[in-house]
Length: 125
Image: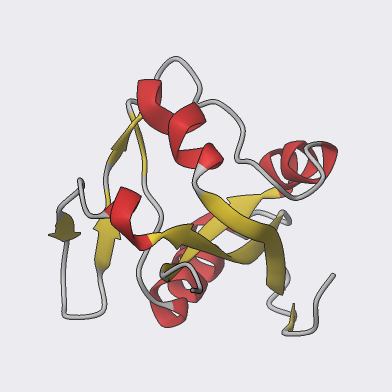
């Protein structure tokens, strides 16, 4: 029987991506002291929007990651709508991120890259 998973997305910057790569594409790094939640989003469009408008600014690069999480584990968290219909995300408390990472199935994939100069790439990095 196959494991039921939910596909999620996460916009990340250069430093966060380097830590994901260091984990072997298997985990998101711990949150910084001033970041109380980890917020994976439910759709690629929203993740791309964040990567373009927030992460890839001032000459920096933003990336969109895609990953699967065990649906049963994810069911303990409520979906949060933070804007229009596409603006949906989970709020994972920072202290629960290690457990969240243990429920990722497979690897974290980089599916898009955006540059602060306005260029983009949808090919895996």
